[in-house]
Image (cartoon, rainbow, N blue to C red; front, side):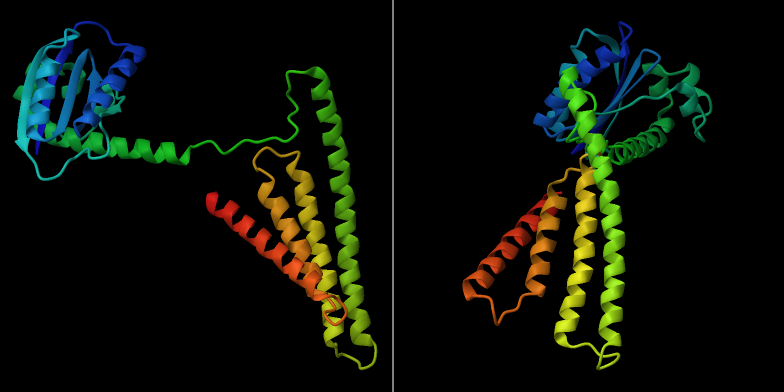
Length: 296
């Protein structure tokens, strides 16, 4: 495996569109030959690194020399390597300014005025630090791209619609949902008051400060009723938000609701078929919720 570094002079001024076209073609060709590397374009000069199998790199370099879009193709160095500097990029590309490079220790002001194929050959000492800098630059680009990925935007009732009538209906429904959300907050507050009342009632009736199993089940039911109300509130607000998709919330609410029923079941009175059917619903909802979460 080798690393081949060369420089050349563009015969035309490469604008961003020209560079993008060049990169697309080169990346496809390099990937087919398992060649990696990087391309730097500055002041009309191309600086490129190719890493891979010697035969593949040599063949690629010969084809590059025949390209009429540049001239003065000059081999800077060709070295045997055991590992690649740019293993993840079929052809990485870094947009730099000369001042940015000249500010790096050891480069002095070389890149502001002397970036030509001939000068790079006569100043090979800048190649190693330049490769290290370009490698770190690519890694930073990857990190920024991964952290700046846009979140999924999804609106059940978008306020912008191509049909004005549908847009009006969406706005009306969104107002209605806001009112429902307000009502649900009131229900949640009453539910909390009911939980307090149930607990107070159970511990103040004889036997004092003691709760039977039935009392505890009734208390759990009051707690779960509040939690379900909270989930319903979230489901309502989902329709007027754009940062979530409501499927997982709907499934979670259904799972909590059926779980609440099971907790307060009177198994002495209910038929076995009813209990078994409820268990199957819980299993189905649980699997569905797990699949949704694992997909995300």
